[in-house]
Amino acid sequence: MPFLFSMILFQNGLIRLDYQPSSDILYMDWPSMHSYALSEIRFSLEKLVEVVRHYDIKLLLVDASKSVVDIGDPEYKGVMTEFIYNIMQTRLQKLARIETGNVTREKRIGELKEATKPTFSYQGFTNKEAAKEWLLES
Image (cartoon, rainbow, N blue to C red):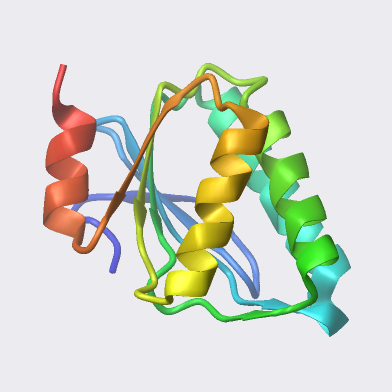
């Protein structure tokens, strides 16, 4: 669900990037990952990084609660590791993620966080309100 008074900075068939200028928060629904769409997923995540860099976004709110992962573990880790390393090359300061409720998937995210050691603050949440509140904390 996009924020009230937001601007769409990028949109394709997989992602939509909504920016709320008053809070400097970029919001997106995380795309579902299917093996037949890996190149499109990589392209979309590259666009996300490009938008974060171009607009100098500091706060990112990702809703992964409805996304599905239907690819093997090596492919998933590859896509996610590449994304994390690329987003670390921006000035992003905080990433809040609405979690899926899938214990196995959340464990994979924890393992990726440990392996990549992101330079930005990361926190998982069960709802958008708490995530937005955390992002806006000093």
